[in-house]
Image (cartoon, rainbow, N blue to C red; front, side, top):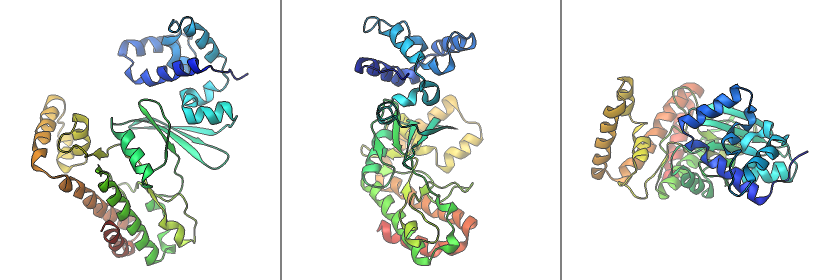
Amino acid sequence: MIPEYTPIELDRIRGVIARLRYATAEESREIGQAVEAGACPPHLAPFWLSRNSDNPPGIGPSLFARLASDPLLPRYSIYGFFPELFERIYRQGQRPEVAFDGRTRGRVSLFRFDAGDGLVVKPLQSRNEGIIVRLAGEAGVGPRQVESLEGFLVEELVSGPSFTELPVESLEDSDIFAIGNRLGTMVATLHSLHIYYNDATLSDPDGRSHLLFPHFRPGDGNSARSCLLIDFGVSVLLDNFPDLEPEEVYNLVRTTPEFRLLSRMGLAGEEMGRFLSQYRQGLSSVSEEEILSRDLRFAEQGLRQAARMVGARITAPLWEGFQAGYG
C-alpha cells in the first residue's frame, strides 16, 4: 500500500534530498557501513541519517518507517518526491519507465510516461545553471523547466535525433539552411540574455551533438526546422561580467585550448588555481562581446566536424542560414 505523506513529512523528505550533496565523508562512510551490514536497504540509504531526528518531535522514526513501507521507493528512489514527479506518480497513479544514466555531472534520471512525454532530473553543475536553463526554456531555446529541489533541475525530456543522427540525404538545401537559421537565432537569443553557451552545438569530435530535433519525422523536411539546444552545464551567465565567481571562471576556461593543453600536461591543484586566478584578473581587459563571439567559433568548428560525418554538402547552406539567423 502506498503511504499518504503529510505536507510536513514531504517538506522533511525534500529537505533531506536537498542536503544530500553536503554529506561529509564521515556521514557517507556511516551510510555505506549500514548498507553493507544489512541494517539499511540500499533504497533507504538517503534517509538513514535522518531516521532518529526529532524535529519536528517524533518525525524521524515514524517517517523512516513510512518510507520503509513505500513500494514505489525502490523503483523511483528519491526522484519520486520531486514536486512534478510526486504529483504524477503518487497522486495521479502514473507509472513512468525510469532509467538512470551515469555521466560526468552525476546521476541523471530519465522518466518516460505513457502519454509520450518525459522528465529529466539532473544535479546542478554550477550555481547559475538553474537560472540559465530557466531563461533558455522560457525563450524556447532549451527544454522547458519545472519545479525542482535545491541542487537539482527538472526539465522536459527532449527526445528525437541529434543533428549528426539526421538523415541529411533526405533533406533539401532549404531545410538545412532553415536548421542553420534556427541555430543562429537561438544563439543570438542566448547572447541577448547574456548567456555564453560555451559548448559544441552541431558536433564534437566524437560525433555527439547538443542540437536535438524532438519533432523530426523521416521524409518531412519541415519537421527538421524545429530544434532545441540541450545541456547548459558549462554555460556562463555574463550579466555581471567581468565580475565572475571562481566556478564561472572555471566553466569559462575549461573549453579553451589553453586549459586542455595545461590539463594534458598534468597541471592541477595550486598550479591550476594560480592559472585560473590569473585568467580571472585578465578578464577586465576583455569585453563581453569577445567572450560571446567564442560561441560563433564553436558553431563553425562543430559544423566542420559534422560535415566530416554526414557530408560536406551541409556546409554552405547551414552556415549561410546560421549567419542569417544570428544577424
